Length: 160
Ligand code: ADP
Image (spheres, rainbow, N blue to C red):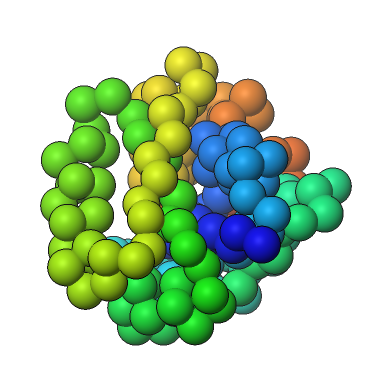
């Protein structure tokens, strides 16, 4: 059985993340979405919220679980017996960073393969950070996130 880990901050999960996760779930027997507990960036949603928002988005897919993890991603991949790590690639913005991370991870454990999947064209310019900025200014985001994520963003950003 092949298990893959899709790690990230997912603050919050967007349609770009959901699309990668659904496509990866078709390739691997089991997909574990790993929500990194404390990424080095300012977060809008806490860990439990980021987990449950992604969980709800994947509710109709049977072979996916969403878990939180601390520490090195590669250690969590080993802990769950993953043979691959999935990452999403947008043109221009992601390649150098993903390449560096993949090399660093391979240096720590060459047995875990990094599989990069290309984004869909409509999510090419979508990032969680830009999404939050646009939403906080009242811009349209309904075609970029699942409905429940849009609702959570509006609630969080109106209260904030
Ligand atoms: P990070 O893991 O760097 O904190 P994110 O949580 O935003 O970043 O993203 C997790 C993974 O999803 C990364 O591989 C990232 O490149 C990918 N990703 C982010 N946005 C998109 C998108 N719009 N389309 C496809 N993949 C994406």
